[in-house]
Image (cartoon, rainbow, N blue to C red; front, side):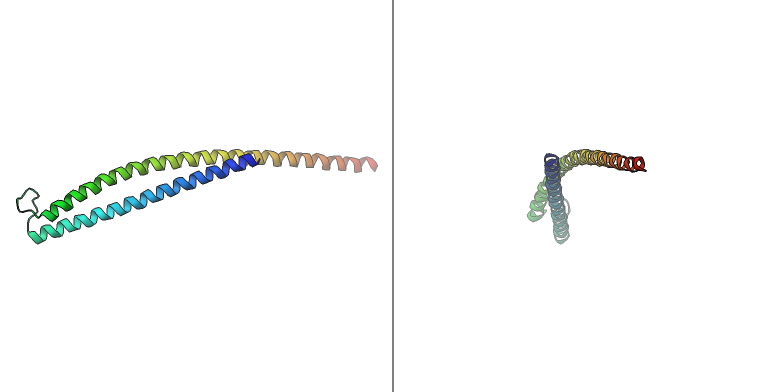
Length: 136
């Protein structure tokens, strides 16, 4: 019995750990997306200031070019985080299914134990009733 309870606690811990990992990745993804939006706004502001929006133009501001490179790096990071997040969600789903399997088995075992206890109690009550009936 304690072994089953320990298994359930272990699986709950694993599910919680995987939830934390998913939450961390979602937060990281959100932060990177915000950085990407901020850089996009900086590029647009620089383009307006310079009056040039063609990246190939020889006078395109160096700052805007470096910001665009940083933005591309951030977009690559976002892609990587999205892949990690998808994998983490799959792991969480698997861990949750495993936990539910153990919880369902434990629930089934408890119902069987309860049903058997009720059967034994009913048999004892029937025996007491039968004894009382025989005396009268």
